[in-house]
Image 1 (cartoon, rainbow, N blue to C red):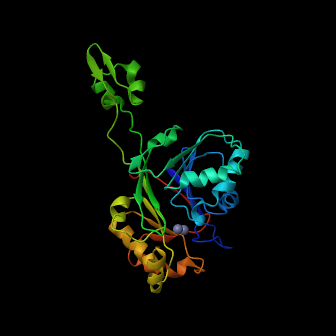
Image 2 (image 1 turned 90 degrees about the vertical axis):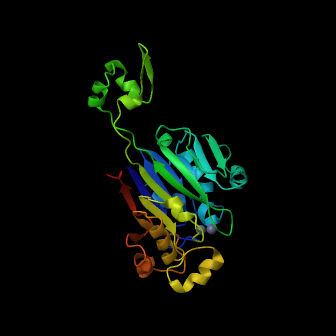
Image 3 (image 1 turned 135 degrees about the vertical axis):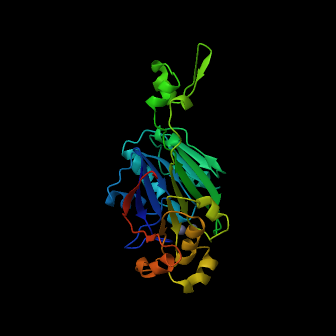
Length: 306
Ligand SMILES: [Zn+2]
Ligand SMILES: [Zn+2]
């Protein structure tokens, strides 16, 4: 299972009710941060999220409401005795942006790995838990280069004593086969297939912000257990603003969720002009029933599908 906390749900600028865009995932003790707008570390403190375990930060684009919080957060992570490597992934220009910040960091006490402009699917080498996570990217349609992410958390297959015995697998290699090794013993090949039950479905989470609703998104987010999507404007009347500023309305986000056949939609990245995003919720639920409006500090667990 994956625990998720909405650190900030505001678009453009922080307000007195909403911090800027950021989502924190906790998977087997490893933390993954998606976007890091101004004030992210303050919000994380407010919501009692520790800094030390963050091993991966995915940045969608280089607008301030998605990246300005990195400067303070990384300093604090260093002070919080983080020593394991940190990987930061982002669009073209992310290296230059981080190198500029480095002038003010005076040497971080952990290794910084930067992946710029990744294309397609990849995994992060590092902590044990991160190897289970397959990351996918999509190029979005925003006023600057912008990446959408999906994360697939693979689920380990169960060990089957019945299968191991039926395949006459020697007991002393059961544990090794379960860990993925293969063995030749007396000219016979033993593989993990001989002791493991069928594949089990993992968890798919998708993050799309900021963008217009382009045709490639539904397939990219297809069958997500949770789809987190920007919804800058609640009122349908603001569609012209959405087109001009390369954002979406609640209705457009919900339409993507419907086309992508996701299980749940969580709307976020609200315009500072919206006082209460829930006032516009029906514009989303009328298109996609399982739409929810995120609030700062909202935290929940996503379990493996049955
Ligand atoms: Zn934004
Ligand atoms: Zn933006």
